[in-house]
Amino acid sequence: MGIIADTHCHTIVSGHAYSSLLEMVLSAAKQNLWAIAITDHGRSTPNSPGPWYFENLSTGVPNIVEKVRVLKGIEANVWDYDGNLDASNMLLSSLDWVVSSMHPETLQVVDDIDACTNAWLNVAKNPYVNVIGHSGDHRYKYDYEKVIPEFGKNGKLVEINNGSFKVRKRSIENCIKIAIVCRDYKVPVILNSDAHFSTQVGDVGLAEKLLKEINFPEELIVNSNLERFKKYLSEYTSFLF
Image 1 (cartoon, rainbow, N blue to C red):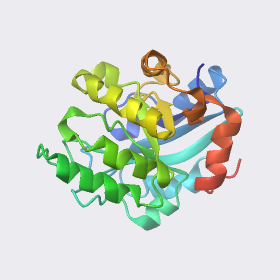
Image 2 (image 1 turned 90 degrees about the horizontal axis):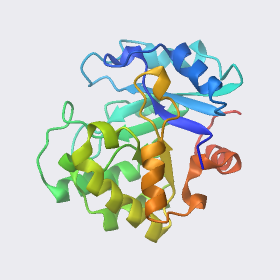
Image 3 (image 1 turned 180 degrees about the vertical axis):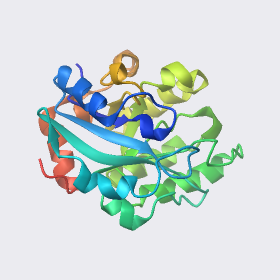
Image 4 (image 1 turned 45 degrees about the vertical axis):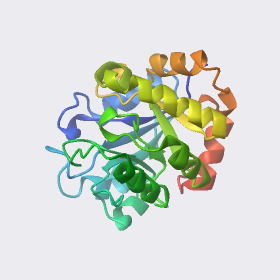
């Protein structure tokens, strides 16, 4: 199957990744990806990008480099259980792509399904969010049957994150449950590498394997097909391609 775009990638400015923005884009070009989204961590993350980094992305980075479309984005942290993010709407509206995720470094783990459900329901209403990042995290379980249909109604792509199968192994069981609910409710997903080094760009093999095992329909995988991905960009972003 493969993917035509990797929309969750980090550069050295995230503080715990190891390649430059250009190195990540050139890796995408080498693999003939149509697009890559650069989504460094929001500012509440320790050692995250400094002042003006995100504000300058739209003018400081070309839309196309080596024939690869470069979506300038952010992985915004869910900041509280009301679903607020650590980036203003003004900033989010200036970016091409927004991944929203929960991390223990920025959101206290409370082991409360209702609280996590409330947070994600409110994130689902945020018009600037494109991707619900690695929500299978075992520390932030939520009511999948209640929330995932709302993601679908609001144009949020549920991420099947390849990195989870490597660094969040306790989350795999939840990833399977989430994928099944997405399949059953016909909610689109997106496969991403969550790359922190250039050689990881486009690597979604483990996520792809999971979807094959549960007979997940390819037509619900937004970034497995160029026309499908372009359609999403046209409907839910202002990116000019």
